[in-house]
Image 1 (tube, helix red, strand yellow):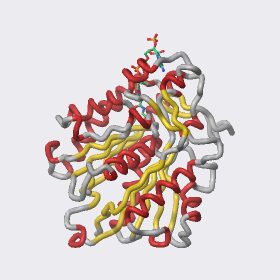
Image 2 (cartoon, protein in one colour):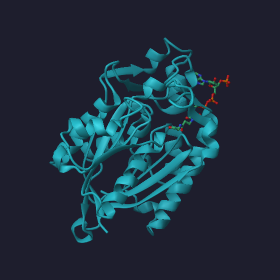
Image 3 (spheres, helix red, strand yellow):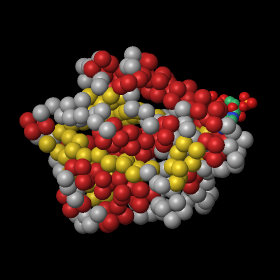
Image 4 (cartoon, protein in one colour):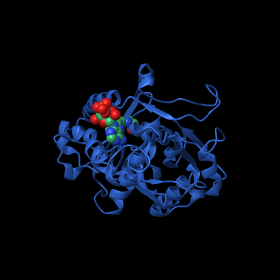
Length: 322
Ligand code: UT7
């Protein structure tokens, strides 16, 4: 069995910045309401001609540069997205082609806001058994394309962006304790009606818009994320005090603080980007990881816990010795 060691990370945000005040001009909302209820102050929105694959490619290139690799070194791309450029081909193969990677495999994973954790788990399993050597794991979204800009309950929450990590398979000796220690995935389709898109190629033949019962999703998030951090620590024989960084999915600052409280982790050890990025769905965790690596907070050897909950419902976590 091999260890999947993170050897690079990168991110990309579109240029267009939209503040809460900007949104208050198109829906009945205020900076105060959005800030107090969610922690969000602004988000980035992709240009009309900017697709998920464009954001993904830019993030992937940044992650490859950080790892000192190029596309030809990679033999697996797992891309998490809810907003593919087209119904098919997978957005991952567009990234594969643009990177000049002519071998290996590239495919998309769909678990909405939990997508990055699911993609990380899939790639980790490929690397662990020796089926791939170097993987790019990408979370990329143009979630703005799914928003109903007349629904103040959802359109103020989301943003666009992409993040990526490079995983390299190392022997246990070579890894020296670093790498993905465990991943934990869950889903429960009984709750599909509290967070979904009311369209799709088979169902309606339309793209559809996001529909959410925010209060119910909030309730499940607080409960499920508290459970999964326990499950993750227990599986590794660790305690909350061992964690250097909590890098949660960025859906709501109040959900993030609830998980941190559960872990008795001071907020200084929690990476929060929600004020500046909003909820970028599958991109939120790799965006936050890349930022915290770039600014020197996350360093080799640190223990990093990521967790997310999203539509499905899906939820998951990954514990990484950076
Ligand atoms: O990433 C995927 C997972 N998603 C999540 O984790 C989201 C989880 N849910 C949440 O983050 C929160 O439930 C929201 C931020 C979406 C909503 O916050 P809330 O405290 O649960 O508010 P609410 O939906 O219960 O709405 C309270 C009030 C309502 O007015 P009334 O009925 O009390 O008069 C809403 O109509 O706030 C109103 N409201 C707004 N007011 C101003 C809803 N959206 C807005 C808005 N601006 N944008």
